[in-house]
Length: 341
Image (cartoon, rainbow, N blue to C red; front, top):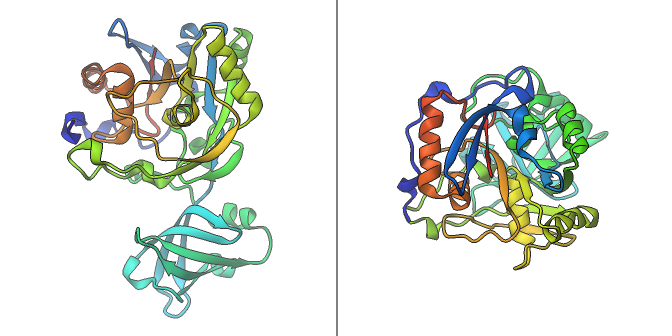
């Protein structure tokens, strides 16, 4: 199967640059993967498609303001860091610009000295291992001087940091938001609870690799980036209860889906666990735990459009995307959603 099989034409003006005013008023495309039907709704209508006993699984990771702008200590030259992963304590893996100028031993100053960093090692990926120095609490300093790491296709400045955060974000560690969750509101969750739908949490810290293009033509040769996840016992029990009783397990977003499919046994049951996943889901994959998926519209030729194609069928997904363009849906992180049921 070729990467080009997952390409589609997308006018640039359909790439959402800012979030809409009310989270749950984005548009919602309903795809029935068995009947191959398409409906057009508003996101708050999702409640009509959820059934008592269903288990909604959401990713409660929290995005850190991971983009830092600073200067080289020796020359004052401008430097940009993107925090990718905490290795231990104050040692991080970061993406840097300009790469050629930032070699081991280089020292960088951020926020007029609130935060300092020394480059320890250049990694095989081209990223750097760095060590921070500061006085005070790291997360408070980061919140003061860091910027939200918006995807490269968003060019507008984000006025409210919280709009690139789900309302249930809890555990800090992501370099990108699990964007399917951005559509949910407190009011919508109250309706979901009242209807008898269980809500379970997983945590997967989304890496910047989620935006990296597939560079091989044959998709089977693609190597996925690795991301850390964990799931607690009480959440695993909610998921297993739904499976045992014949109800659906519905993932909010591809990140939740990847956790479920990484840890499920052949019968679709899960247990409390933590680790790293580099699972790559593409057509031909047999889902073990997942029954349905709430997701946004994904980039052409991305691993994420391959994942949704595995669930609903490639031809049906490509037809749905064609319709979404025709109907002027908003695409990507701040865009509209689809529910594959």
